[in-house]
Amino acid sequence: MRKALIAVLETCAVLSAALSCGGGDRYVQISGYAQGGTYSVKFNMRGADMTAEALRDGVDSLLVLVDTTLSGYDRGSMLSRFNAGETVVPNELFMDIYEYAADMFVRSGGAVDVAVGPLFDAWGFGFTSDSLPSGNEVAEIMSRCGMGRLRRDMRGALRDGRLAPAALLSGEAAAASPDALPRLNYNAIAQGYTCDIIASYLREHGVRDMLVDIGEIFCDGLNPDGVPWALGIDRPVDGNDEPGADLKGIWRSDGGPHGVVTSGNYRKYYIKDGRKYSHSIDPRTGFPAESNLLSATVSAADAATADAVATWCMVIGLEASKDLLSEDGLEGCLIYDEDGEMRMWTSPGFEVEDAG
Image 1 (spheres, rainbow, N blue to C red):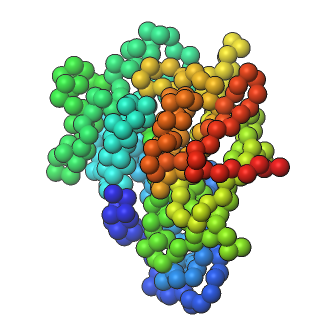
Image 2 (image 1 turned 90 degrees about the horizontal axis):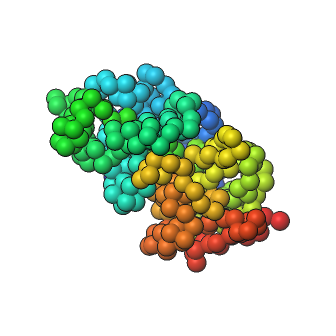
């Protein structure tokens, strides 16, 4: 679906008709700020049909489009206006990511749910700073949010190209609580999804060797040394806030396309009354997931899936995650605590070297 999406979104990018010089390998890097952090895109100009400057402008334009569409922190974004109850005219990006999220909700049995924004807000991991809701408060919040209350097909909810939040409610939800309008939070998939958009854009213009890092990662082909990309897996210990500063292991690509994402409980958490509360909220219970799983690194054919499955793993815990990562198209590494010692499990196709 995102492959078709890029043809639509590309018209929003600032493109140049100038051609690159062609020739041998020439790697370039572009970087900047997006989605509340920094991004970096490295790619080989061999085969590209545009100059590096034109590709940079296109990437920047797509990132601006993602931010103005999906940012929950920008009050003027399409998502923020929709969450505030405003009728919007959704673009292809807004509809495509919703449909992907609806499919992932079904596939995960509710473990990945982008419509529990109020629940993440209540625990202090959303777009507000509240924390420690009571059991009654959690139950009340869950009664008025979640993908289970919403239509799967956003396009079917449009009227003259416009989307009113109430129109996204299923018939049953609309009858039961018409004032409980949907609020969406794509934090579990947005960065991986954005990596895929950028990767698709670069492919459309002849790029094959690339590493797209927007908090999550997509890589394909070879690095400047002529070998497949290598990625570090952070040691999941509290206070390890700088990616790459303290590595547990190193994963090496086979040269094919891979979205690679790590989710864990060692960066987004808080401690209150001596207890640690992590951002891995289980949408099925309304409470933070309790598990000895410290981090999940997932490889999939695209970064959006890797992003969603990494979140899914942190919700369902160690043993269920082992079964999940045995499915076709998924590989990964699970780091967990066993009697105070950090241990690692890897799927058969995910080899990790010691970081030294």
